[in-house]
Length: 82
Image 1 (cartoon, rainbow, N blue to C red):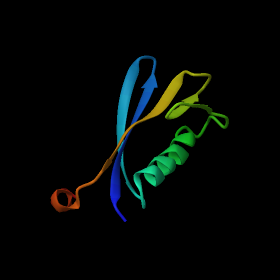
Image 2: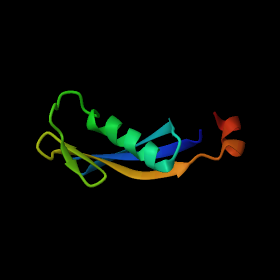
Image 3: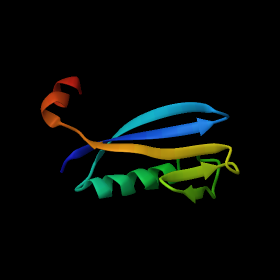
Image 4: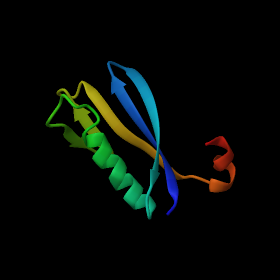
């Protein structure tokens, strides 16, 4: 199965933090689904996040977590990096 780099942005009070994760999945669509499941529980204290396009909002839209990109990892070059 291929690996996919997932970029997630977290915005709070105009402060943007980017998070990068590596997900193993059969297809890019499956990788996106896994990322969305992960993002739904991104902040543990909010039990009822609101779903938006490509992400979720937490704490009554005070924090926005969004899937920015999905890119298949090229194993040839990244094995040395990892």
